[in-house]
Length: 226
Length: 127
Image (cartoon, rainbow over all chains, first blue to last red; front, side, top):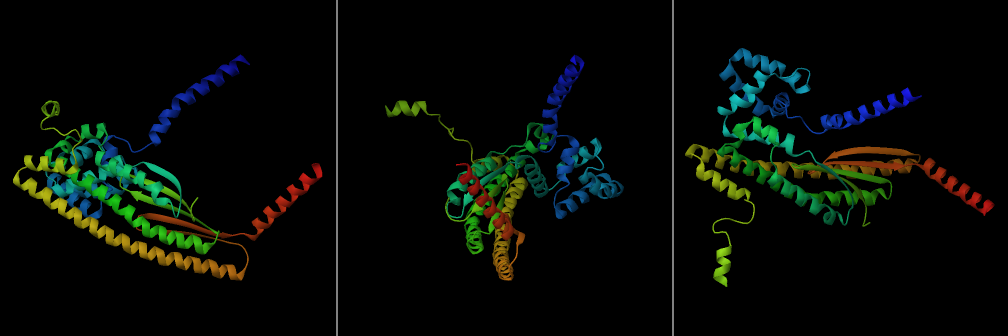
């Protein structure tokens, strides 16, 4: 009996110790070299073409062909990018990248590491703005204040260069404007949702997910005013 | 008194955090000519990108509105035919995604009414 109790206690302690680590693994993207490469490989097709053209110029067409072939496996996690790939793509290539491409790399990193928060709100079609506006304002403030996590900034020192400071300011302003624009567009969208709920006459349920650069807001919408 | 206040205030330093404009201005001062040109061009490109995104978002919004109206028409047609139905639909809109469920379930309504009636009877019996 005592042995069973001790065994149970040990299992519980082990589970308690493993729990935060398991949560940590699931929470957000990792900061490892392979994680950073994977994040960058989610760039758009135009940016990836430019990246691989530079890759071929700097490291030879054979290496670029291999990188192109392995892209899908790197993205899916089937193959883990090694240290050499990280150094080539994220330490050596930025020295020869255009400012435009470096900005797109930074934008991707900000999407990956600074925009993961999600919120849920219950709103109605009349009072939604009062409920939503403070949250959008908060997300706009977050866009301005967003900094890449320290482990990422430490690895990618070129992000601290003067031109990249300017890039950060441009992207932050752009994200803030995008969020403000979304808020103004929501007026029209809520008009459509109100029309739909009124026509559905109690049969309808609506959930609207607003995607902003600094986070996602899921709204459960009810007709009229609560 | 006014002089004292002036002395207490920091001379060339704002009490507020730097704005994006300040950061940009500071950065531009420290960049060489080519870099400054690149930064200005990127800022202008970003304005154009936002304008294009806005236009695309407006188109998505209009399309979603039409699709929502069509959805209601379909639900009304199903209503006329009678019987239970559930329609789940997802619309890509200007700001994200709208998920709609329209549901009519006479069976559920009848079951709820029967349950209510049963509870009422039990209440009256055991009162």
